[in-house]
Length: 147
Image 1 (cartoon, one colour):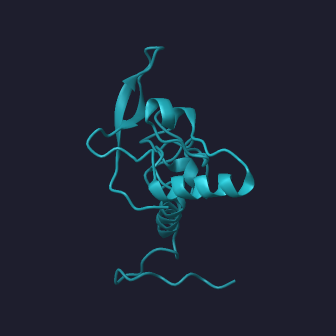
Image 2 (tube, one colour; image 1 turned 120 degrees about the vertical axis):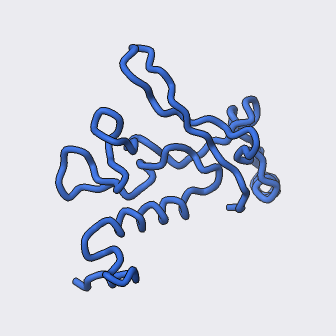
C-alpha cells in the first residue's frame, strides 16, 4: 500500500430507460489513481523469478490505464431515499430498522490503493451514528459499552 494523492469523480449519468439518473465514477484526470506502483512491480518480478512464474498485470491496467482491485466494492449506494440508494448518509439501510452497512459495499468507487483504511474509516463513521457509540455531550468520543 502506498499513499498517493489521487481522486475519482462522481457524476450523474442518465439511465438508458429514461427513468432518472445513476451515479457513476470516472478517473480524475488531474489526480488519477496510479496503475503502476514501483514497489509492487519489484515484488511481483522478484517473486516470479524466485518461483519460476511470470509477473503480469490486469487487462484494464495494461490497456486502459485504469486501476483494478481484487476488493469487491459498491453495491449499497448512498442516496437520499430508497429510489436513489440503498443506505442514507448515516449508512442506515432504507426500509429496515437497526440495520447499517459498515463495509466496502458503501464505497462508491475504487480508492486506487488497498481500501482497508478507507473501509475502517467508513466503519468508524457508521458506528459513530449509533446511540452510545458516537460522541458524548462534550463532543468527546463516547466509550463503547462492555459486554
